[in-house]
Image (cartoon, rainbow, N blue to C red):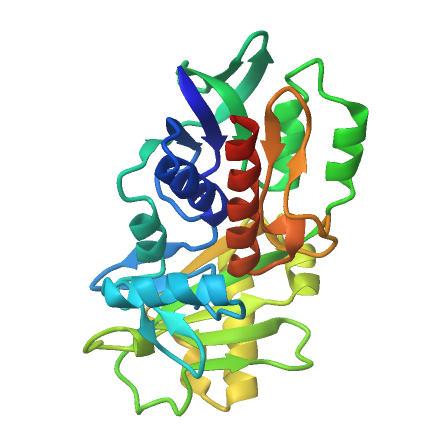
Length: 313
């Protein structure tokens, strides 16, 4: 039996797992996706790649800065824009680096919980994992759905989780024929109804052969277009906005266009507490506890790991 089972292998879950494993705890992560990192996501494209979630890491605190420095020393991250860091391998490489040596069950969606003398987690493939303690490191709405499968979940905990709100985001990923150099790497867009950020993804790469860009929508645009049956016209709208605000008409004419929807992109009403303890050796953590940054997820994962480890003494 495990000491701790963790549902979710984003940065919060990976950080907690890394810390608990270093303290000698037996830990396993259960992740619904095939990849790791949550919004630290890299899309593989023909001959290239693009970070279509988190574009870069920008440390503010000393603890996260030290982690960044370790990743630089390991060849995982490089400086990008001032005080920001990216990976020439794709930002998912940072999550994979954190996950080294951890026990992972990827492509397994947790669908049911039970608790008697210990926790039992059942996945959609029929996998059952038993653990003394359980950590849910997933977005609050997903945690609500999972906790509702356990009849002893308190209404107080569910109420706390329901108070957390998120803004969605729609991301367009585009490649282009070779062009004249672009004079920026990342470009925040102000006062556009559709677009909020453009990243020149190829600027992170070693010897890129052609431009690769990622376009992030505003929350208002994402809410309006999120359930569209065909996302291609939605992506084209983002490219048209980008072409107009940058005065680069060729941005409307990609060689390849892919779209991704982020339903829980940015927490807008975090709990303002590092983690949530829900009794019966049950804990919850994530960026939604403290804010909308990767560093918030890291802080949350560290804090809940300390609490879990101290409760074992």
